[in-house]
Image (cartoon, rainbow over all chains, first blue to last red; front, side, top):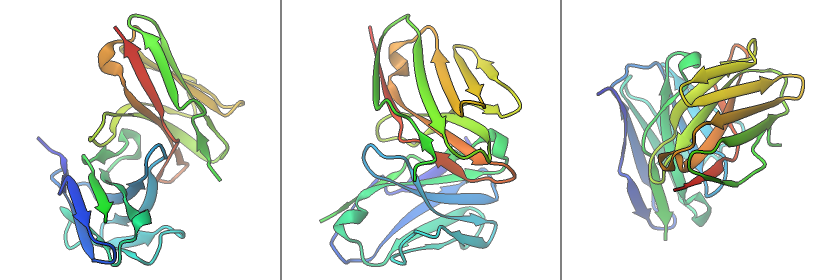
Length: 112
Length: 112
């Protein structure tokens, strides 16, 4: 089945230790997104790629970076995780705005 | 500034009855609206959508109503089933854009 896969499902990292979350898709969608969702809050867009074009949201902290080496993969790098970065990180893809997004299952990040 | 709001964090409904989930938005540039359903430890899944040129869209047990003048939309589920218990997110897209802006979600509990 065509899908969006996020690894790992759960990630525990130490305060200040760089961590990378990964996302892959088999849908061949040209747009990929990273969202951060904290408990009981709306998912918040961090950035997105339209093909290779990177688009950062204005309020996304510099601590968050992203890489998209090819159509299928996209990575979220958190350079120095703080306690406030503990959240669910959702990857999504889209091709057609009317079909909405296809989300991965998310990675729940814990910072200790 | 939250442009998409779901003012009810939770809703409890008896099985077989109607569930009505509400969503308000402030940005008049939004022209496409979507509802997503999210189970715990999973990513959101697309449920139903509506274009701003319509006031109603129906798909099986799910109907979305849009009142543009009031900047309000609602999702009706009838009859409600226990398997519908999840968090429901309302989302909106600006015209000519592709980015989703989410509401904070409403947790629906359908009791047998």
